[in-house]
Length: 543
Image (cartoon, rainbow, N blue to C red; front, side, top):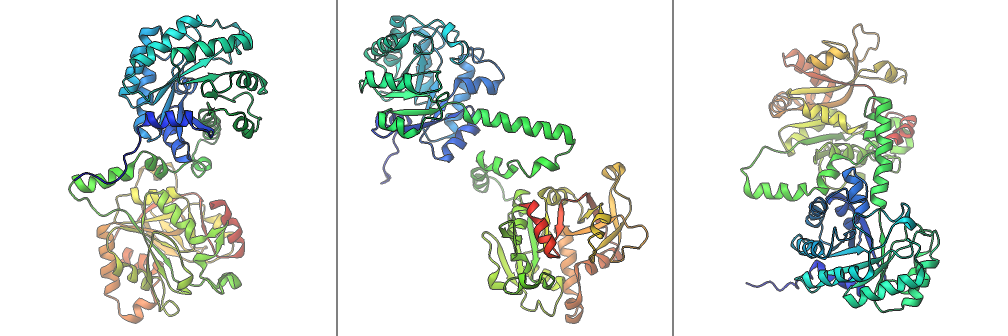
């Protein structure tokens, strides 16, 4: 049955409409599939496949050191990754008229909507490098190249833009106008007039003389302080932001590389860079996940987390008068949202939150809520039992008042043990805060050797003077499918009074006494147990 939905216009048609429409259009530079997708998601109606940026991403100069087939391969990935039209910076056309004809045919085959070529000699040099010393192509020969491009295209909407370099090369306005007219007669769909001046006087002068004979495209890289409204009022067709995604990426990569080199660890950069989940999203991982459900046998259940957030948190005083501790704002958003963000950044998206005190005030998108209405008379294991009643299987259990960096959750889920806890080896620093804490005695202290050997829990205590303490439990416990089954059986065997009084630390002791191995993954800081007003302020570092 034919679809009633209107057909989406071709990319070539959409680019032609962008170039010809009365209102000004904007193209954002991109240099690979990822940057192209980012440009589209930002809202741009079209993409400029920058020759400079593609060359830079390949690590070569913008002097045709990257072959036209290498550029073609890059722009094919860009076209595959996006739904908006791409105008490729085709340099000089990579040769004579014959090269131009082949380039157009190959671009059409790969879904590229148009090409811009400049009237300089092959191999070209970037216009902003010794511009006045660069010879221009013979204007008649270049016009022939444009005619060849237009006659080679199969799609009548494929766009060919002629870029005039006369102003940059120092040949003056008359020559720029003469060349533009030759290229218009040869069949160009638009004229790109380029200038290296820091003010727009040249391009404004050109547009005044040129009028509306053909749409005019500009690249305000040098005269970037000019208000865009000036371009709009003068009737320019398209503005190209020509290299700013590439340049911004360089700045960020340089800073990140330097930070990691100096620190020799990742803690100061990991939270500042895009999470891997964002990379996977841009790569289309969600679509693959849905396709796997259609075409592959069913796999095991995804990673899950349980957040125990039923208590009030009376130690925070008036802050929890009308909401539980989990909803107290930290750096502008509820504590619970920070916890959820850490789990999701670690790839854990199936999250169950146990509510209790002021449960109506506990709100979060994309989670499952279960309620412990007996929160005032019970401890943490009663809440855990409520969560297990909602969903069984492997999970990470944590408190609703503990902030942590995503790598801590990743360490837990990466470990193959049935029972795994996260331990802060800097427990003395935590003890200085003068609060009750859960200290652990382990089979080995946190040393280089601990990275190679399996470390296990021997005891968990509240006495900081106990000999042999190796760290503080952060309040995170990972359970495998088997581990979750053991915990459920342990909890189900308790009578009501026993269940009501049992805390997570009591459960850990019972597991050790019963002969179960509880594995330990060490960390040094990067978490916070929110127990005071000072902690609420300190928690802003986790935003």
